[in-house]
Length: 100
Image (cartoon, rainbow, N blue to C red; front, side, top):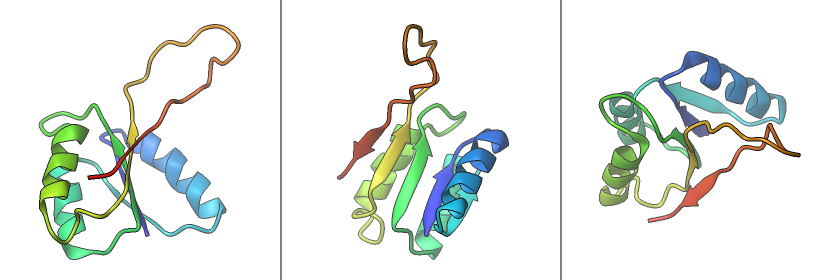
């Protein structure tokens, strides 16, 4: 199962629909704290994690996950802050994959 973590429900909705259409099972969390609780309860194959969230940002979540024996091996894809892109690729999204 893939965990999608973003404080914006519309972003979760888009990713969720795209992944489910490709046959992936998904779960979601609207905050870093909610994500940590879910990660300690459930098994995830991948986490898609927004970098910019209030209270606990994506990097803080990743640091905590890397320090836990249960979650340290889960791969994380960071969703970077949206930037204005110009030129030939206005819809390009840059992802960062992080492994502890």
